[in-house]
Image (cartoon, rainbow, N blue to C red; front, side, top):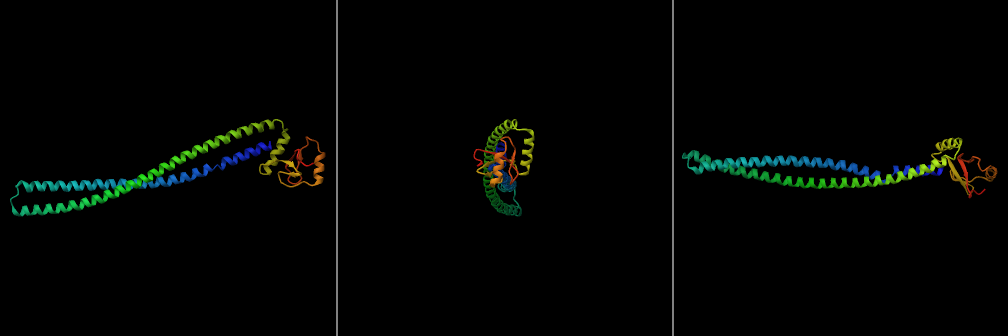
Length: 234
């Protein structure tokens, strides 16, 4: 029964310390951080898209006004020299304004292109992290499923042994096991208790040798239940 309990303890430790657990935690933290970067990058792209739309609209608005003024100028409807001069000056000013706006529009377009590239890179990184997380989670689930199979087998073996052990001995075993970190019974091999790893003296060994086979033995050093084996050294 101690052998099966030790197996169960090792399986529980293995379940708890699977390397996939740590990697999943790392990836989850990285995904949170990169996703935050993605949101920030997407916001920058959105702002620049609005800025470009505004710049496009301003350019078109000024161009439309220039077209109207050119149409008036070419129509010959304006004969007053002063009005004609004023319209010509306005056309020159509009041309300069269009140049300035187009420069600003080009700058926004370049910024937008850089921001979109940055967003694509971040999005690709995020997708790669999510894909790795999915793979690691699958590996974790497979490892856990394998551990669970071993746990079920160990528990079944333990129940078979438990059915042959008297209740009083089970109670004693559980009590000692709770006191000594899960190890309630230990084998006696080569005159040594495998619980405390101490070698028993000759007097203790002689006394143990005289006890009946069904006697419940206790280690004189650590008080664990002592199980005799063919290699006990008695």
